Length: 80
Image (cartoon, rainbow, N blue to C red; front, side, top):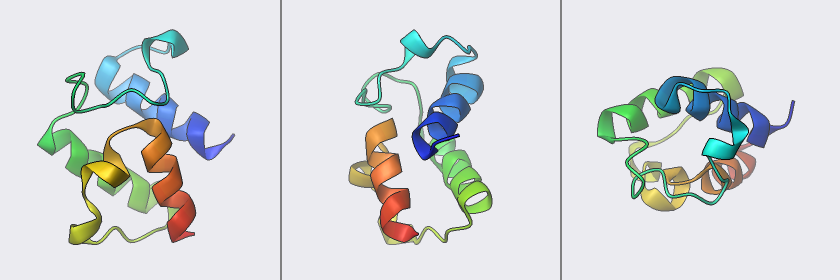
């Protein structure tokens, strides 16, 4: 399973409560669409650290890294 598939699946299951892939485009802004809030971002960070074995620093929790499936995938790639 690709990184993108894992991230998309996690967001669909935990924030949109569906497995319908058409509900989330990889470029959708998670914040602007109201899919995720600040608490959800922290949950996402814990998931990323555990599942992808990376350390997310406080100054890396910014929209450029966490606001879409694409940005999360790029962030993970840069950390591995």
